[in-house]
Image (cartoon, rainbow, N blue to C red; front, side, top):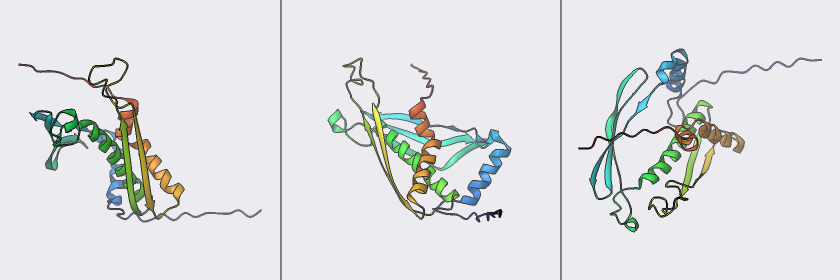
Length: 195
């Protein structure tokens, strides 16, 4: 009986989809050798402006064995819409949560596709969250304050089979930090300095 031998050729790792794939793999190799490099802390500082408007500054974080600063200090505002008796000067905090989920999974899709040598042509998503404000208003003890359900829908096109593209989205979902926080929860502590 003949024995088939399959020789796999190693694909050259080149930047793809705007992702620096060689550096991505070099980073993964560095973390394999020093797992403590994977420990990060991200931060946001928020300050009330007026009404329901507040602004967060995101500028520094720690990780990879040191302190880092973003190239610029990002400022993002949050407000409530007019229908909730505010001035609608920025998205709602719960809308940022939907953005965080979509952008986390989309970023993962770009990295995973590049690592697999798949060129992406388009990635779009729609994230919807259902919320009943009876909980926030304190009008019902049976209704929770947060979302009761979130639906994410992704559309992806690239030079791969539909099954391969679907597998990329699934892999990104499985590795998404935001998806993990939303579906598994995380301990949150709160302290107050009043004066």
